[in-house]
Amino acid sequence: MPIYEFRCRECGRLTSIFVRSISSRYEARCSHCGSEALERAISRFAYHKSEQTILEEYGAEPKRLEDYKDPRQIGRWVERKFQEYGMELPREAREMIDAAREGEFPEPVKDL
Image 1 (cartoon, rainbow, N blue to C red):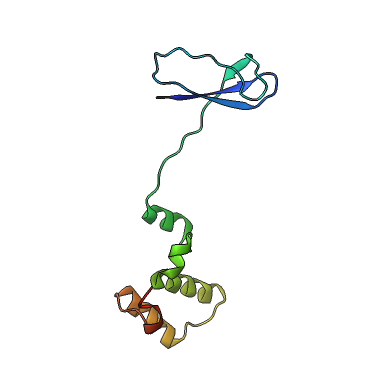
Image 2: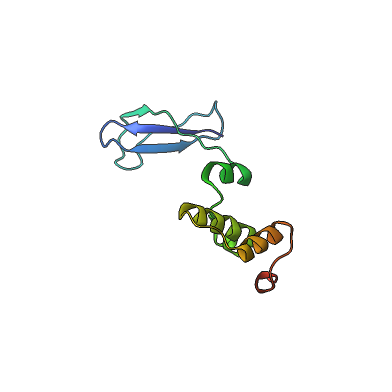
């Protein structure tokens, strides 16, 4: 079930046309101005990335609200911020971050 994209020669806008199968006939008409003067456009495509790939490409910055509840994400963010500011991470913070990576969460966040 392909989706074809056309650019209108009159208004210049893109129109997407959903077709049930490659052999199906379809009528190409601009969905914005109604013109039939359309030319085929090269469609963009999407691909899905794993969460690991996203973290590798964009760093470990939390992206979703749920990520802020994960002490490991918070620890990565804290480490990066201390590094950016050129500051030494306090020993207590380092111990809590390392413990969280091992699955031992500090009392205040155990229930999250």
